[in-house]
Image (cartoon, rainbow, N blue to C red; front, side, top):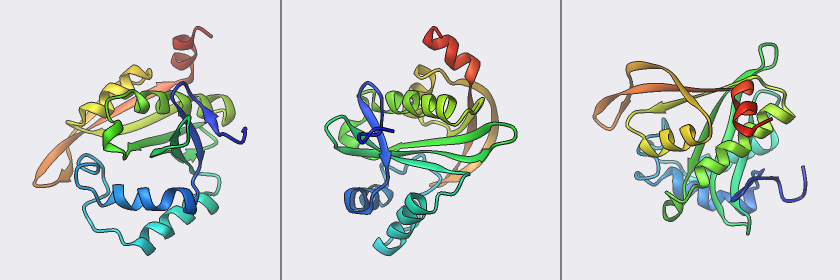
Length: 185
């Protein structure tokens, strides 16, 4: 990895850093609009709680989770993304992305992040399958995942309770073969 992280067209994925990323992570996790369709965010997060989360992911990630801060090419922190529950034997993992900077929504940063994260997962980690669950109706995530080459693999009706209603879980997947084919490799 270069000193600038894993570069995409618009973003770079860099290690989480308390000094550079804590304040924005804290603001985002406590913003009801940002966390509208995430599984977290409905309980208040204090600075110590968010600091512990960040330090755990940045220094104790272990070999089952890789978490990055998402920055623009000029260094603006706009979100976080991760590869979780890595199963090394079967070479698959689950993924997630949160673009927390609301003023940057709809600019293609999520799609570029997902593409860059997939490249890292397939080329560097040697995984063969990535899976992501999306809470319906998270249109932004579904659009970004589809543009980045993920396909819907199934649905679980009413899996998630969020803010007064049950929501379907949509399983989106990307295989290394589909990823290679989409790149012309």
